[in-house]
Amino acid sequence: MLEKKVYANGQPVYHIDDHCLTVYYKTGLIKAKGKFINEMMEGQWDFYRADGSLWTIGHFLNSQKHGPWTRYKENYQIEKTEIYEFGKLQKKKGEH
View 1: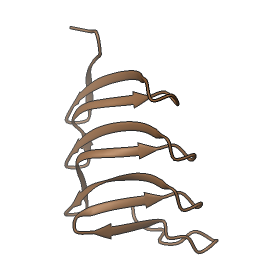
View 2 (view 1 turned 120 degrees about the vertical axis):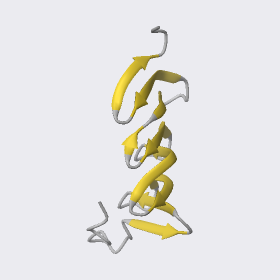
View 3 (view 1 turned 120 degrees about the horizontal axis):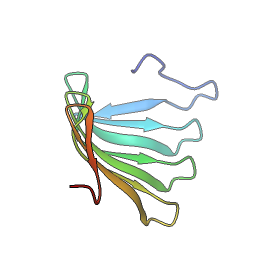
View 4 (view 1 turned 180 degrees about the vertical axis):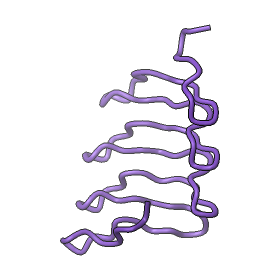
């Protein structure tokens, strides 16, 4: 996941600080950020579009999608919510 360290323009691809991984676009804007423990994505992660707007908030357990995942429209309204368990989609918002 962290093979590439720097974009051609010199912009770092990511930064790790105190178990928090921040991944950048080549423009320097944040692409994603969240807990990174023992080389695995854990807990809540926030993902952003190239323009800096929030795209998705999701949760990981041992680098697998686990828990709620909410995608947002460009106007910050919820587009959809899904629930995952150990990487497998369980249900979408409104399903029972």
